[in-house]
Length: 335
View 1: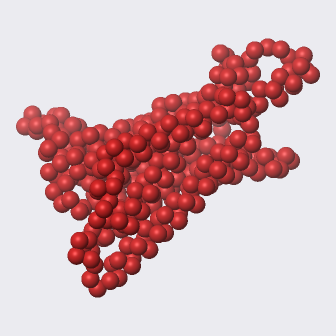
View 2: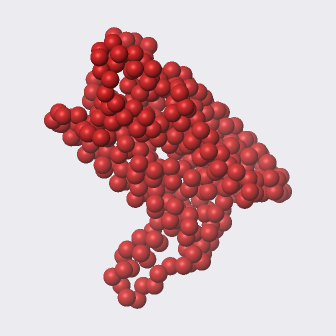
View 3: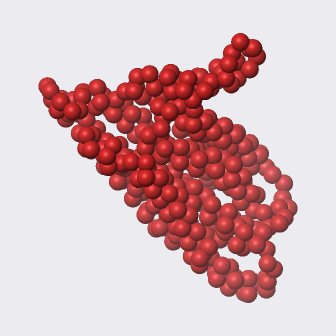
């Protein structure tokens, strides 16, 4: 594997620098999210299990997908299927994130639609099944290009016509990936479709909560306090969904414009911005959790105090799970 022989210009250096910063923030921030859920038993329910699944995917974005994207941007000389696999990895992690968000939206809907029966219907086994689906389905769908939905035949025809029979190509996303797969299947089907469904689900969630809170008396088995708590958490998770849409929609739109308008040219700085924006989504979720979800905020502070600030204080003991549970979960209705 070789890197194409050209010097990096200022735009490319800037892009790689921002990618490195986003990768570091994604890994550190989402490791903190997983750590918080591990330590705080008050964060051990279906929603937060799905949040952990999303955080693991975001860790993989920082550790694997962003380095792969940087290598693709350098147009390294590699074999076709090596390049294709790196591009498929980006699709897998995007699809995992969207499915995790969809599972979270369904979970929030079920919580407000059947609050009394929820815990008897959605148990630990159901949660494990949902997390498994969020990983297995994207792995299958994201690897479809490896199974034949790619541009190798087109490249082989081009190579024959240009007397180029070498085994290496200058790796780039549009060179190996079929744009039919990227636009119709991935963007329209696996990004826009679920986003529309999730928007509808959150509309139903907020509408249900609003109607319940507008009653002078809520059913005796479900308190107004429960719906207020659900409103707060649903608002925070809807913000996560909104940020995902803001970060991920621009880049596929650029690809769609290029696909349907062969004479249209996307300026390289704009393309770089779209790529950076999509990757930055993996770094913003922990910030949302810290500012919007009280249980996470309290646990993050405890981790910082005991594991970092307290490292220089001999009188400070390391926290146990029970300690964090008592702090983060002393009010079970707090979010």
